[in-house]
Amino acid sequence: MNEGRTGRRGTLWRAVALLTIGVLFGWAGHDVLDTPDPTPLPAAAPGLPTSPPPSSTTSAPASRAAAPSPEPAPPCAWWYAIGDRPTDAELETAAKRYKVVVLNATETAAMKRLHELNPQLSVFVYKDLSSTRNYPGAVEGDKDAPYLPSGIGYNFAQREHPGWFAVDTSGRRIEWNGYPRHWQMTVWNADYQQAWTKAVTEEVVREGWDGVLADNDFHTLKYYSPAVLSGTANAEETDELLRKGLDELMSVAGESLAKAGKQIVPNVSETHLIPGRWTAHSRFGGAMEENFGFRDDGGSGELLTFQGNEWQELRAQAALGESWLLLITRVKSTREERAGYASAAMLAGPRTCWMPASTQDYTKPEWSELHESGLGLAIETATRQPTGVWAREFTNGWVAVNPTAGTVPITPPAGMARLDGTPVSQVELPAADGVVLTRVKTPPSSSSSAPPSPPSSGGPAKTTPPVPSVTP
Image (cartoon, rainbow, N blue to C red; front, top):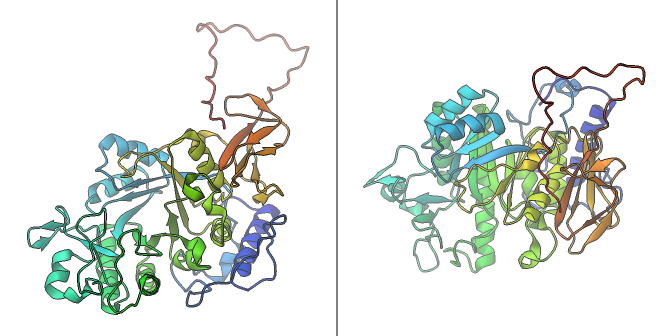
């Protein structure tokens, strides 16, 4: 957060954010961000907290109200580096490029190296909320590895707490489909919650991590298994039990880590289905959306991110700029890359970070040329046009995203150009696509009486290469 920004626009920015959160949870009467958008904001789901609890990331002294407001910066870059061990060269680059890096628990040396290279970089450790694992690397024979991908070791649970393994209605343990040796745990069990929290908090503090990226804060078990949990009558009751348990686990772990001065950022899924869940689970440091800019209807429909309550909750969090929005867009083409980045730009803020994912296993350090577009700061909140297109102007550019299922003609502000410098006055923006434009750079005017500059004696004049083109 840049502490140098002051003025009326900053004050308005924070007021907008606070009023929007008030709308989400019934503290205010209308949506101040979406003047053309008639979509009502839903109330929080029963059982979810409607305000942040005291913690290191959400509480503040009374003097906080006078602090400068957050910079509405374009999306920063981050690296979900859990697919492979990073090389020395990758760490050097990461320290310069990224604002957040997530590593496996085994990569303590890499974490320390990143902190040396860039003390401002936040480095989180990967931990799974919902499973324990017994593949090689997670276990060493009948012992658990010293650094685990989960909070609880398989052998420890097997030996000391076999009841922490979830079982189906036939009493069989549940191994996740497509993920061999990943075993579903009883996240609703209070003893499991406390043990997970204690082990993870102690490790994070001991090793010097900035916090935890907590994976598999999921909405439903069906993507991993069709099993019905013992004690439940059907899949719906199974999912309700798991969600309730994860709600509780996030509260217990979040409070513990906050007291230790650490953060927890869950990979929370399908929050558009439950009003308030994103906000409740992000209150201890932020949240991750692994399917940001995902297209509905088998890849031919609207952008799912903009549906339901999740979009409003993301916007409110981004405007406050106090916790991380870690966004991932699966990219198979430049269309998905544009749509993902443009959607993230609607959430401009100091802790809004976006990455394209071109591999399923996150083995590649990702980067997009769109991160280099030089948009500057947002000078307005994102607005939804009557056509359904969202747009936002920045000091050095303009961004639009079309979350609808049809092509929409749009008119950018005057003086905009594509990233290759081509002036633009009208854009036919395809379905589920985005466009990033920058202001045409006007050369400085020179006096007609000024003498011409003498030629350089150092050789031929140099020209600046054009910015790479990314066009819809």
